[in-house]
Amino acid sequence: MADTDDPADAAARLEEALDRIAALAEQVAAQRGLPPAMVVDPAAVAERLDMLIAKLRTALAGRPA
Image 1 (cartoon, rainbow, N blue to C red):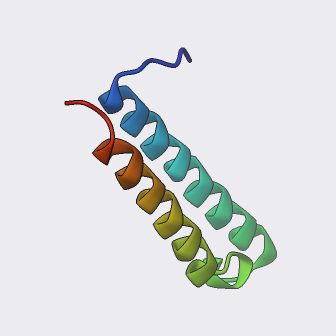
Image 2: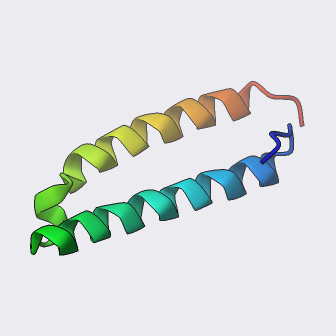
């Protein structure tokens, strides 16, 4: 997959990556017979995503329209 400067392409790649991460967490949980929240700490994931979103907002705020 080629990287571009197009924000829509970047957003689509991010969404696909998040979908893959969620699917993997569900798969691991199912293999272990556990609910996904016992395999992945939802609060920790949410905190990391919040930090990444803040960085993205900062970067976009400084980007020319």
